[in-house]
Length: 260
Image (cartoon, rainbow, N blue to C red; front, side, top):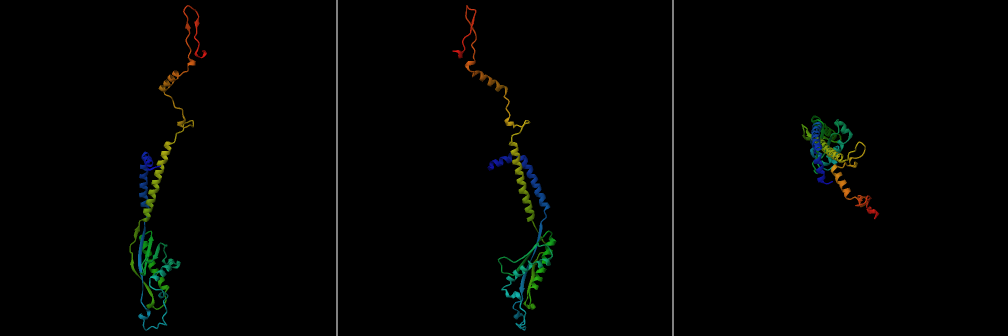
């Protein structure tokens, strides 16, 4: 079927398509109102250290200092990956105490020791509360995996934290788009179904299609047909009238054409 045939069917069945589209539009608006959006909040944390322990505490012998395991990794960007791995542990998830609707990641393509916390919840209050819980657990996990004197430790600091959550409209948009597409498909299918039923031959009471019934001949058609039959009748059927001969009492019949 080409596009012209498609549009022709839509136009002929517009009494089905137009009300259907109105219903689909109303359903789309209703779904948009019913589906509640999710809310997102976030924070940014930075890792920082106190420099070389020997410089910060020159009177402390280097042999008696307890080494920090994280100082063996070059740069603080790699330490952020260690913290991210710790936050994926079940213990850290349990310490947060909320659903796993949060993530901890670093900045892609950057060597800065930043941690990006994102929380998605059903209410704005829950999203902000989850972000605060995750920030506290990050500081706790960082202190648990370190050892050594205070001047040799790496710390974390919250440099930005959302106090209000912003709505995420993606769920509403997806629901509205799905309703509109499925409704449009249903309306078009209904229009073509009506078109097919209209073109289907009807059955009579005797079980035969109307197209199979013998058509009634009009009176004018019957007259023309009978006149044509008379004109094309064969000569064998023509009977000559009897002829009487003058002076005779007998009636002599002429021979028929087929007797000659």
